[in-house]
Length: 298
View (cartoon, rainbow, N blue to C red):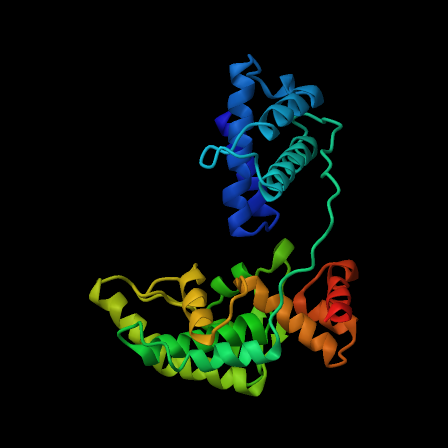
């Protein structure tokens, strides 16, 4: 059964699922497969729609191991996503064509959190005043590059962390997203100011992080965003937390908040929704139309 889950993970990677999904979805399946083995289901062809539903009912109604409360809707939704993709994997690979799709419980959809343009400016100004780091200049330059990429270009988290230096096309003022959602590539325009911030980070700030890499005697990284050790930067949570505190913003902010914010601001400025869809790399217009609801409520 462990080998089956490994094949599932490889299948997710082949289809271009985000790195975070490739890591998290098989974790839910590992738990389901352990449950099957405990109930004498040890072969792929023994898995049935009924056995999957039984596991899900058992899993969904358990308590959170850390809090003792019920599982969050987000946790449950991720498990449903993992199982439905696992069923699809079994079907398309011919291992076991199970006819089942778990449905999410219908709940009131909340619009995503967005920042005002004034709050974006406050975050930008905060990049010049963060005094909690040894080299304030280098960190500030990287923070401004982060805003240029995630707000100015509206990239998804993994699209930004996967950026290479060669993906910045200076003369064309574009960023090349090599591996977007669903393994799709696209070119995203960079505003002049954003391009200046990116160039400043590469010319100065990024070199500071590369020196830390050299001190560790490790090969130079070609990734655009570098962490304190000069390796690929995958996590921005603490940087965003410090910036929003400096800016006096009380909202919950993540990298995806910047993406939601630029989409909303572009719509407010009068850009056609079809162009915003292309800019964000959405597969369908339906995904983009949520921003029309946000604009109407602002």
